[in-house]
Structure formats: C-alpha cells, structure tokens
Amino acid sequence: KIVLIEALNRFPLLWGAWLELNLMLKKEDQDLIKTNISNHWVKNFYLSSYYIQVQQENDSVTLNGALRKYFPDSLYILNQIGHACYLNQSFNVALDIFKRLINLDPYRYESMDLYSNILYIQENYGELAYLAYRTFKCDKYRPETC
Image 1: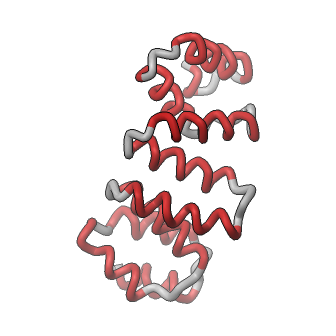
Image 2: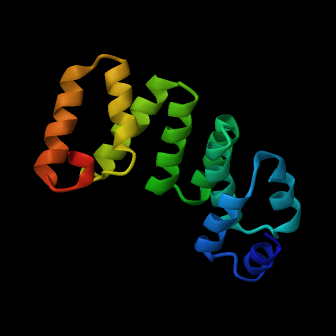
C-alpha cells in the first residue's frame, strides 16, 4: 500500500496504481487515501469509483456531481452517477441517466447490464426487447449481446 501511495503522489495519473490500491483497501482504510495522497483531480475520480465499491452511493453521486462541473461532457462520470443511482435503488433516476447515455453514445455497451436490469425490474419488456435487438444488431459477437 505504501509503495502505491508513494507512486500516486509522484504520478497521480497512473490509473493502474489506483486500481491496484483499490483491490487492497478495505472500507476502514478510507482515511488512508484522504490523508496520505495529495489532492489531484484524478483522486476524485478514484474516490467516486471507490465509494461505489464500498456502497456509499450518495457520496459517489455528490463527488461525481462536482466532477461534472469540470468535465461536463464526460460519459464516464454520467455512467458512474447512473451506477450509483442503480445501487441506491433510485431506478427512475438511473433509467433517465442510462437513456441519456444511449442517446449520447448509441453504440455503448458499458453498464447496459444495469440498464437492462432496471427495465426488467420495471417490467418494461418492450424497451428491454429493443435494447437486446439494438445491441445484437450492432455487434452480435460481443459477450454482452449473448
């Protein structure tokens, strides 16, 4: 952990180190990140992902909302907000976000499993069938479309 923290203080854009650190940390290690890693905008991206992992969805939504001010066109941030809303069982909000993501990027496959789960939960079988058709039509050999 200490080596990764030192590496991130020197090279904060090293996303692989953030991901490795994420695998090592537990929920009680939160303060280790907040106090020992210098502030950088990438740290906020990491924390928003970490909050989803430890089921602090509201913190993730708040942090991603702040990040959207600096990266208003980021589909990644919008996806993170949708993912957090899904985990928080705010299905209507998450549904709107995923629809917006599809409108912005119609060939998107990332997190479409969450979108399909929401459609299934809400018994919106017509839209679910259209999602399956659209993804299959775009690329029928991807694992996500099987």
